[in-house]
Image (tube, rainbow, N blue to C red; front, side, top):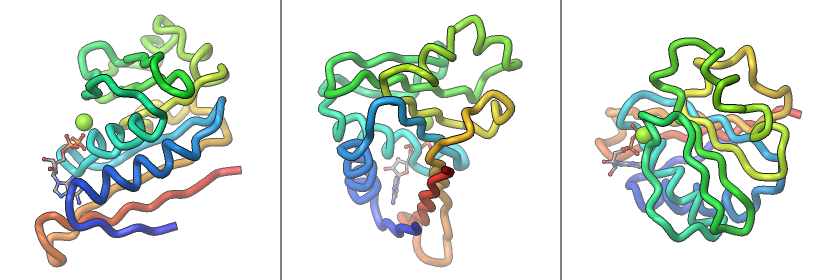
Length: 142
Ligand code: ADP
Ligand code: MG
């Protein structure tokens, strides 16, 4: 499924829609260059899960958990990960194969430990279509 947005509020709304549909055990993989809108999407997604607190990139902690929504959200941002052993230390398996919802920014960096069944979301700019244009591809692997 391909979506096109023309501003952060539209990307937020798409994230929110997917957050509303998310089910226990779902894993969402989010990829795209710096500044493309991954965090905006994640904020919408968290809002769709009913999470009210502020959601930012957990860049220095890799994992941030939110417990105040309809389901627990495990928000990973693995941009600064050195190697996948750091994921073991975090106890990622309890998150990936648990009863909450995982959203992993920069999941391409930890491809080898991702579950088989994930929903992958790629966000891209296309400056020929305007500064605020984003192309968002949502693909469910089953
Ligand atoms: P990332 O987490 O991918 O590094 P952010 O979500 O932090 O990126 O930042 C995206 C920036 O792009 C924000 O400043 C946002 O306002 C801006 N922006 C402009 N157009 C869009 C759009 N269509 N979707 C998402 N963000 C957009
Ligand atoms: Mg970010």
